Image 1 (cartoon, helix red, strand yellow):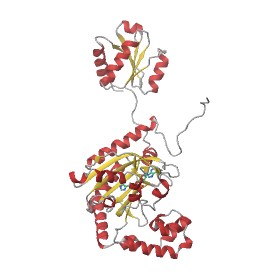
Image 2 (cartoon, protein in one colour):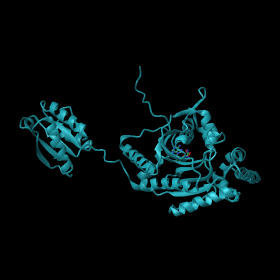
Image 3 (cartoon, rainbow, N blue to C red):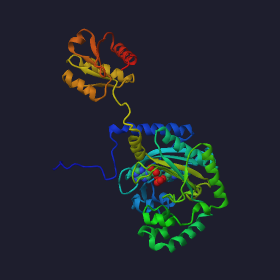
Image 4 (cartoon, helix red, strand yellow):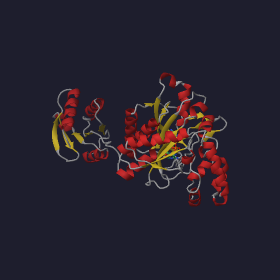
Length: 428
Ligand code: HAM
């Protein structure tokens, strides 16, 4: 049998290697801490859901549902392309609103979309997703947006915030009719995709990236001028609430989101540092969604941030590499008699929460010191047969290379305590 062919990961699916995992953990820790400051609780859902859930929530005529879902057609199930629909399904299924009228939830995990992979765009990617369900007040919109901004600020990232309103089932249909009439008049100037979208999903024409379409839509009717009085009032109050929280933003009437469930407020956190992938995070209100999935008539608002994009930005904008992932101590057991006591010492140190590494190969001191350097050890305890007979080892500070004798007297537990104390009191 031939085993020599290497098997590689699928295009658009990426490993997160140990040297960048520290950055991912940092993002996740900051996100959890901030979400919890705002009273959000974690929820975890399965990755597979019934396809119907996404068709009904995200919308049949969207790119995600039309082209990007990983579905098992014979089984009627799909790997989630986003988290909001799943959270709403779980929320309804478990009657979460009965326990608490306003639910604040977050989830962190992988999502799947069959897009064309490029920098910051993958087929398996990860989102930090936050939702506030059951509250209609415009100040909630501002609070949620402020939470997203706080997370990006605390990570040290520079982004800009854009805001729009997509209206509601009362004011959007007449706007759509006016927009379609405008697009039909200009149809020859539109790209092929937008010619098709004019009838399937006309709002998407507004955020086409092709220069000809962009120029053409400058003269299109504006949703912001077509809002009904209730949506207009809501949107003004959101803007005032954001100003009160000192969150800068820019209105962008061409921002339409790629998912159909949005109503009223929508927003995006944008960067110019990731090429074509400008959105680090995005979200909005979805006031009719829960009802359309068979739940109570409750409104909601949320956002999701792309963790790959945050990780890239962290590297680019702040130069953040991995966290300190090094070991506290490396035990270099050099003689045949020292292996057993040193391995017990390593075990006891680990039980006490110390990051301890040990080499069982009996290699030379030089090789073991090299290994200690590779694992990022702060200290190395060198114990040869001769030292062991004298109940002594040598403690080497790996940064300064300074070496001092270290007494290995008493029981293994006492040795462990002494060593722990020494590590805690020595600054390197
Ligand atoms: P979305 O705009 O589709 O919204 O995605 C949110 C974020 O996920 C994007 O801004 C981007 O950072 C990241 N993202 C999306 N697709 C990819 C990809 N292929 N590769 C890497 N990152 C990606 C939603 O998913 C909504 N569920 C957000 C939401 C929550 N709205 C209300 N609640």
